[in-house]
Amino acid sequence: MSGDAHARLAAEHEALIQFLYLAPVGLVQTGIDGEIVMINPISAQLLMPLSRDGNLANLFTALQDVAPELRHLCAMFARPSGMICDGLHIHLNSGMPGKRMRVPHVLSLSLVKLDEARLMAVLQDVSEQVRRERQLRQSDAWLNALLTSISDYALVGLDREGRVSCWNETIGRVTGFSPSVVGRPYSVFYPDDATTPDRAHDRLREADDNGWSLEEGPRLRADGSQFWGSAMISPLPDRDPELADDTEPAYCLVLRDIGDKRELIDQRRKSLFSDELTGVANRRAFFEAAELELTRNRRTPRPTALILFDADHFKQINDRHGHPAGDAVLRQLGAALSLTFRQVDVVARVGGEEFAVLLPSSTLAGAAAVAERLRKLVEGQPATFEGKPIAYTVSAGIAAIDGGETLDLDTLIKRADQALYAAKANGRNRVECWSRRADAA
Amino acid sequence: MNAATDLSFTAPGLHGLLAQLSPEQLDRLDFGVIGFDGDTNVSRYNRTESEAAGLTAPRVLGQPLFTNVAPCLNNFMVAQRFEDAQDEGCALDDTIDYVLTLRMRPVKVKLRLLAEPGSAQRYVLVQRKP
Image (cartoon, rainbow over all chains, first blue to last red; front, top):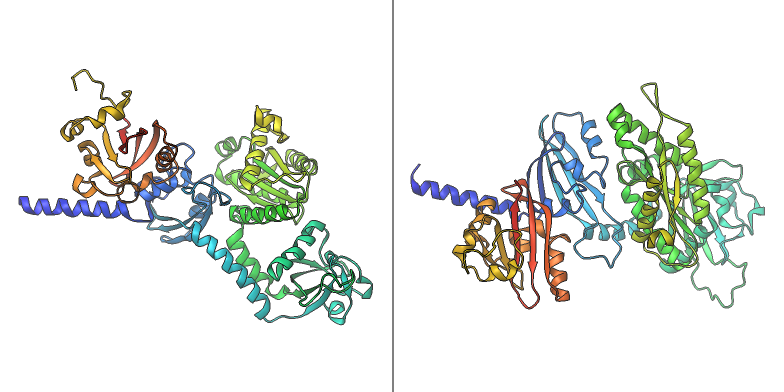
């Protein structure tokens, strides 16, 4: 090659390298097992703060604390090539304001299988988009509630305290309740463990503040049977709070049976908010729910507890019995957690073998009692894989907001994590509660 | 500058020593040197760094470091450290383990971050691990 041609090629190569250096998205090429072959700078910018071992040797390992399902997702992808995930949101932290500016809170990951040996990944910090999207979704839910065709609805007047203020035929038709329901709190339409008095009160305050409050979930008929319903509460307009007496209607509750759309709604919710492997909530759902609960907590102080569970010696389970057996253990642990906690509690998988449970209106002692029940249940009930029992145990750390203290979510998580660390240090298979004394030590 | 002056990656007081080196002397160092000014624009870029990254100095000099030259350092582990030191007017001399993406390969390195109050000049030094 002539000197000129060579120089031209070198300059072109340098320009290409710089093009990749400067691309404002993360690009990674890996082997099918996630081993990194090529990687550009934005990827390192985003991944280095997450990498537990300070390495960027394997993409799945670098993301294991925040996207534990990746390895599984790729393993389950049967086609010879194609898009494994498109813009999967990875939630890194609560994203509460006041944090340092350079800490993103949501990453988007797209993963393409090129062939049996290679993957390409695109990574992006989408924190800002997600914030905007969340606001939009709220309006969407509202429009949905208004515009979607409905099989039937009940129109319920509520007084200032949220008690049913009068009876009409729609109430009888949708819920089966007779006029004797008048005077009872509207939580009478909810299954026992699907709300708390605090939560019921929160929704009235939200309706006051926003003009409406909308929620979907299981609802209860008079005969004890359940249906899937949406409930929209809005304050009645033109009401003089000074003059109104306590039993006069102050809110309107529209209760709709949306059982026929439940499958659709469930599917959408599942794809966005649940953990692929265990079916419990994912990090995204957890952070959203926890943030909302703490906002409510600040407005109307009440106890709120957080439990972090971690499967003990999980790496040994994987090493001894293989990853599929480890997955079976996680699935069983997820199921045990879902069974043990209330519907109003949020059970989420937040790390590889780490689960979090948020308990609205629950004290530290109350949470500790349930955590202990779960610990015993797991100890006494080995997981099964291919017909063989696999015994395992869990450790738990608990922290709570109580006595009017205001805590942000990151602090609450940090405290629960310290308690979990103490449970591990004190021999595992145990439950520890955070205490100020331990923090000072 | 006499021959006995310690100019190794770990040498104490390196911030002051680097300021006195000519570009040719910087090029002779066996670790990468990226110097940048108060506005984060790259002002010094030595041969070791240029060869490892595959970029010649003209493409880099005068460019903002954290967005146009080394976006991989634009997080709380590196960029934020320099910002904090600048805001608080204090010195920064810390060595951290890091992974750079030199020519799109992940390369384990040690980074030494240097800033001195009263000097706009700051440095990221890069030593590839054996």
